[in-house]
Image (cartoon, rainbow, N blue to C red; front, side):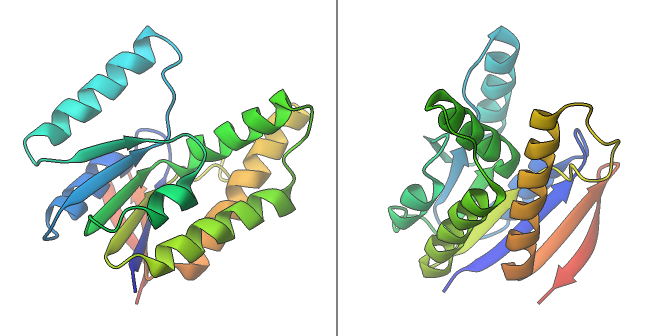
Length: 180
């Protein structure tokens, strides 16, 4: 049975670095599940820097924008999985649905999140999820952005409820919200 950790916080709050440090303190083989597609040169450079930061610690990188549950179910050779990040995963799910002429509903996102958690509970190691806390800012000015905020907020609540540990990053400092 997995130990599930959720690390949340604002943009550039230190979530990914904290998650990586936490994962590297744990024994065994580590993999990062990267959900970010390469959209432009700036994003490619960010991804390159993240990979470079993990090279010395012998990480395996698994790039998967949508099928987190499938990746987790097929990760038996790893002891630690770091999913970075849930926020982009929700974005990717929205994008795929919209490409098909559909809208991703809160119920759809919740079901996807429950599937990810079911896979994580079967994982025999530590699963660390990184996400952005998107509900503390201003209310977005358009329906799509508000729906995105709502979908991420719903997924964050589901993950936090199921997690053994929840950490809120504030200005690079970890604040333990839940410890079990």
